[in-house]
Structures are given as structure tokens and as C-alpha cells.
Length: 484
Ligand code: GBH
Image (cartoon, rainbow, N blue to C red):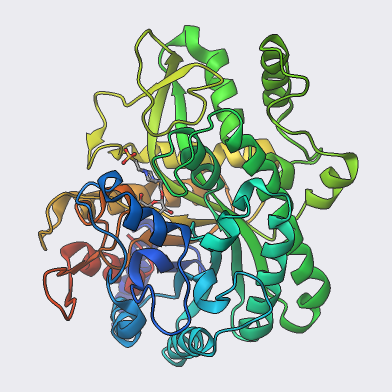
């Protein structure tokens, strides 16, 4: 009998191990962002962000003419969101702070009591339910009054952002252990300034995006160093930045050099922080400098760093945050190719980025290529060494709001499998995975037409009722068993 039990236990053990177990301590979470879920755009003393102004002034830029005025009403329904997170068994919930909800003037001279109360409620509520808060300081909703002063293209933004970060650490740092400064610089700078399709809607390709890039890097480092010098000893948390990566593969062997450059450009906002040498990726820096010179510019359109700035920015992260959704094949731009997302590289490198026909299409830009995630994780390690990597977003969109979301569930399964392979086969130090998104929300230019939630939100219901989809049940199961 005893032997039989033993055999049973051993086979059960081997079964669980071979049944795709995640390492002990690996954490699962889900994410949202302030403008996409909170609503309450003008309650109390909150002032408008660039997204409030952009959606109100240019509704034609949003597919359904909508905005985030109410969104998921998470400003009022935060307890419901916490309950959803709890039901899923999430280890952490990633959300962002609305800068203008906390600091109505954009500057640190006035702190909103209501703003503080809201985020304290959310943070305390999460912790009371055993869920860690992971906080993004900036998920695209810059205060409009700072935009009026040049926003991300004014070098002073580094000071403004630093002051804001200090307020956030002071208020919440005793309970928030994981921070990220900026969510997806490539969107904040490149997408926003190339096509003008995202707020603040300024078309300045090859100029505005690079000025933004430099200022953003300094702003990030400022916020990191403030944590390091004033808070780390007390709170001992982690601060990083979140980069969006698209896996780039060559269209054919003749496009390999171009693919190398596209990947390096993809590391524009990582190289200054994570590389040993610091500064812009050298191949990109010289490429743009030469091109600028040919075009008659006195200096490169990509502003350089001083050696002090290189040192100031280098090493300013405690982890590498990656948002991964999709992949592209890289080829030299053909005549009449139009600027579509990802725009990155299309202006300067003259690349065309196309999906492979075999990848599964989601809504518009989102084609599913799960091995691309594993490949990108490996590329990060190859390029920058053995950083702790947190997958801060991954998810799939559908146009329909169906509850039995078979394609989304499959997407999660396939991508989680690749994460596991990166950990077990390739020894990449991935410590966490975050589903985008906990709930359907305002999907920027797509408004409410593109759904990312593992939980459905009924936007026609004034109560914004939430219903978990099949993918939510699947994800809860993965978390519960800590395995696939
Ligand atoms: C992330 O962006 C964001 O962090 C998150 O806020 C967002 O909701 C999520 O992913 C899903 O998009 O309409 O063809 O012009 C990823 C980058 C930004 C890519 C918006 C698609 C619009 C493409 N996404 N972009 S298009």
C-alpha cells in the first residue's frame, strides 16, 4: 500500500513538473491605465490631461468618436475592480496614476486631497486582499498645461516629472514596491509626434519624436535617481521603465542588415539605460547623424547626450519592463508604402513592417506570433545581459464583446507557453507576467471598438457592469495551479 502511494506521489510530482510549472515566486498580474479606465475626467479639482483635450477637440481622431470621460468609471468602481482581481487570484495589479488627478497644476505646489484619497483607497484595498500594487507614473496622460509649455519637447519636463515622482513616492512608497516611470516611450514620442494620431497630435516626424526621446530619457533617470537617493533606504522597492517591443524578423535574407537596424531602433529607449556603454544605440546614432547632415541640418535630428547625461541615465533601472503584443517582418520600404503602426523606423530607416501571412490576425495591427515573444526576451538578454525582466503587458483584442473568447484564450495560452520556454529552456530571468487588460477599456484611437479585457465591460450600462470572459477563467486557472 505504502509503495503504491509512493508511486502515485512520484508520478503526480513528475506530472506537475512536466505539466509546465512556472518557477516558484513567479508572479501573475493584470494591467490597466488611468485614462483608459478611471473616467471622472473633471471631478473635484482634477484638470485636463492631453488626452481629455485631444478627444474633446478632435473626436474624429477616435474611431467611434468617443473619449475617456466616463470609461469604465473605475474612479467610482475601484472596489469592484479589486474584487475582480481577487477572484482571478492575481498576485499584482498594474495601474497608472493620473498626473492631473494628483497634481491639478501639473506642478508639485498643490496636491489634490481627493486624488490622494482615491489612490490610497485603491492601494490599501488591493493590499487588504493580498494583491500587490504595481504603479506606473506616466501612461500617456500629460497635464495639458505642461503640454502648453512644450510638454515632452521642453527639457524642463525632466524636473516636472521628477517633482511629480517625488510626490508619488512620498505618498505611496510605503506600500508600493514596484514602480515604472514611463509606459512605452515609443508611443509617447514616436507614435504621438510622427503621425500626430495620438495626443498631443503634433506632426513632426524625425524631429519632435527625437527631442521627446532625449527629454524622456533624462526625465526617467531623474525619477529613478530621486527614488534611489531619497526613498530606497526606507522602502527598498524597485523602479524601472516599460518598453513596447515588436519582434522584428527579416522579410528575406537580403533584409538582414535593415532588420538589425530596426531592432536597434527598437532599443532606442533601452540602450541608454540597460547597456554597459550607455547612450543611444551607436548604429542608430550614426545613421541619423549622417542622414541629418546630408539633409543640411547643423546637428543631428536625434539630440546627443553629454557624457554627464550618459552617466546620469546609465543603469537607472531595477528591472526591464516589456510590453509585447505582435511581430513584424522587416523589408526596405517599397514605393507608396503608407505610415502605419508601428511607425518606428519608417521615416528614417525607410523600412516597411508587414505581418507574416501565417500569423493570426486580431483587430487591425495585432497579429499573433507567440514565438516572437520568446525571441524578443532572448534578444534583450543577448543585448543587455541578465536583467530581471517583467512582462508588463501582453494580450489580444477582439472587435466583438463575446464572453466565450476562444481566440483571446488561445493567445494567452500560446504566449504563456513561450514565456515558460524562455525561462526553462533559455534561462531568461523573467519574473512576472501581466495580462492586458483586466477589463475592456478606452483603447485610444480605437475608442471602445477594440476590446482587450479578460473581463467584459458593458459600456451601454450606466453601471458599467463587468463580466469575466472565458479567458479570465483560463487565466485564473493558470494562476491557481501556477502552471499551464
Ligand atoms: C499598449 O500599447 C498600451 O500600453 C496600452 O495602453 C494599450 O491599451 C495596449 O497596448 C493595447 O494597444 O490604431 O493602427 O494606429 C501598445 C501600442 C498603441 C499599438 C496604439 C496600437 C494603435 C494602432 N499600441 N496603437 S492604430
